[in-house]
Length: 137
Ligand code: CMP
Image (cartoon, rainbow, N blue to C red; front, side, top):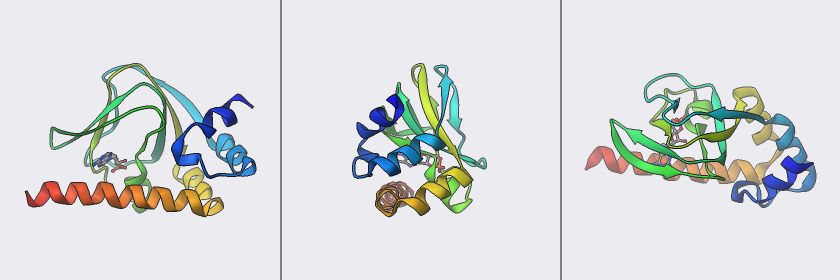
């Protein structure tokens, strides 16, 4: 399956077995996005975890740019994991294709792949650390 092959090139999924990759692929829904569209909005509830297949996006908090994301990067995990409001606004810079997973799909994915869950956890802690640094500055 082409999607399974494409997933092997994404660092987040690099340690998964082919069985796990097939499971990941079965959960994914590709969404085409136009430049300028907000994929998450700071302070609003969020129901989707997204992985960028194509294109780039900018992450802003309180109107300030805090990161740029591109192919293979993921976002939206914080609100979906913890049920908290979106911590930042993520806006498409270009036309994009994102693979979206809803809360139930994301939860099954984490249940089935401890290595993946750990990577997402480490990424989430780093992001929260950056956000916290911004608050104390
Ligand atoms: P969430 O809070 O659900 O929605 C906004 C997303 O922006 C957030 O999840 C993270 O995925 C992402 N994000 C927040 N802070 C950073 C950061 N410092 N660097 C990269 N991405 C971030």
